[in-house]
Length: 504
Ligand SMILES: *[C@@H]1O[C@H](CO)[C@@H](O)[C@H](O)[C@H]1NC(C)=O
Ligand SMILES: *[C@@H]1O[C@H](CO)[C@@H](O)[C@H](O)[C@H]1NC(C)=O
Ligand SMILES: *[C@@H]1O[C@H](CO)[C@@H](O)[C@H](O)[C@H]1NC(C)=O
Ligand SMILES: *[C@@H]1O[C@H](CO)[C@@H](O)[C@H](O)[C@H]1NC(C)=O
Ligand SMILES: *[C@@H]1O[C@H](CO)[C@@H](O)[C@H](O)[C@H]1NC(C)=O
Ligand SMILES: CC(=O)N[C@H]1CO[C@H](CO)[C@@H](O)[C@@H]1O
Ligand SMILES: CC(=O)N[C@H]1CO[C@H](CO)[C@@H](O)[C@@H]1O
Image 1 (tube, rainbow, N blue to C red):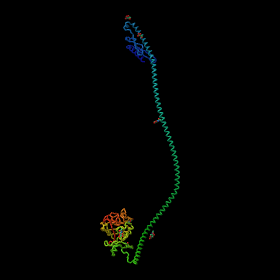
Image 2 (image 1 turned 30 degrees about the vertical axis):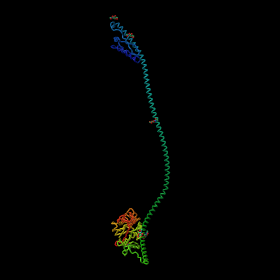
Image 3 (image 1 turned 180 degrees about the vertical axis):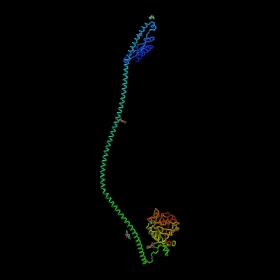
Image 4 (image 1 turned 120 degrees about the horizontal axis):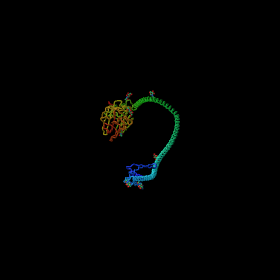
């Protein structure tokens, strides 16, 4: 191809050189489908170029070195000789034509050759390129198909994966479903069993209801009967209570009658004794005196034990009469001297009295009550401490109430040397013993302080406390006490309580 191009170019250059200022001559070469057009120069214009050489030889691979075929004729001669010049011109034209024809032939040949080979080459290259393209396309296709295949396999695997997963899930579901079925079956069985049991229970319940219905009815009727019975009992109890009330009334009436009868019997006995004494011992007189004051008025001046007889009573009572203190006539109802008698005693002992009138004793609350209520009486308390000091407390008015009022104390008109303040309890204070607590303390004063006394809470005095020997110096709460004389340290060695009519 290159060679051909070079040749053509050389030729074209030659032609161009000839064409300058000349007319153009066109030649056409038809070769198959291709047509080659050549423009040939007028030779007369080209003759001036003496050195022009056109080589129509083809040399090797190098571009054609066209040896100019320009005529070597001289223009000067032709001008002189026209005819010869004409001939020469013709000749040269002929040869040029010939050379041109030759050239053309050569060219044609060459072109033909070249064209053939070029065509072949073209064909070959075309085939090559086509094959390459085809191959490329093929490879492309192959790669594409491989890609597609890969994708397909991917998709396939995915599908397979999905399918397997779905299958697994399906399996799981079926397993689950079967399990559920089993459970449902079990539940159904259970329900059936339960309903069986239920019906059984219902049967039993109805049976029980039937059985207990009658029992309940029986119980209800029994309850009704019991209620009626209760009503009757209640009425009966009411009646009985009424009867009891009247019986109690009758009882107290009877007691009173009995007391009257006892008094009468006593009087009769006393009468009999009196008759006996009159008949057998005329020296001994029956007690005519109500208290020591009457005895003193009768002329007795010696202190000692005398017999008295309370008003409306036939009983003879032995008492100690103090005939010295303040003119005498004192009936002693309490005396402490050496601790020979236990004063920590109960209610009944204090009610009836204990000890001997000649020694330590308590005359008895009933007697003191009867005596002090039969008239106006004064109280005198005599005390002696371990150093031999004597003191007294005097109460112008004194009495105690009966047992039904727990022998409540009543004192007024205080005076004396045993303390400027009254140590006796206040009026209205009830009597307490270890077995009957009537004090105003949450404690039990009679148990704490010992003995029977008019305890408040528990109060500043207790002449019935424990008798401690005079040698002892320890302060005792339960000892004999008369607080406002010498305080808590007082050690009493003698105490006497006595009464006599206030107007003595
Ligand atoms: C299926 O796909 C899941 C995720 O999509 C992956 O984890 C699993 O390994 C795959 N199984 C197989 C057998 O390819
Ligand atoms: C109580 O005494 C009266 C008569 O004194 C008598 O009619 C009555 O029945 C007595 N009551 C009882 C319960 O003894
Ligand atoms: C003694 O008895 C009489 C009559 O029974 C009575 O009026 C009087 O009050 C009584 N005296 C005493 C102190 O109980
Ligand atoms: C206490 O005094 C009485 C009467 O004087 C006497 O009989 C008794 O023996 C005395 N007791 C003591 C323990 O001193
Ligand atoms: C007397 O004492 C008793 C118990 O010790 C008590 O039940 C009664 O109420 C007292 N009487 C009076 C009038 O306070
Ligand atoms: C007129 C003229 O120049 N004639 C010439 C023609 O050519 C011959 C030969 O070349 C010459 O000799 C003539 O003189
Ligand atoms: C007129 C002309 O140029 N003739 C030439 C044609 O070619 C041959 C050989 O190539 C030449 O010798 C001629 O002179």
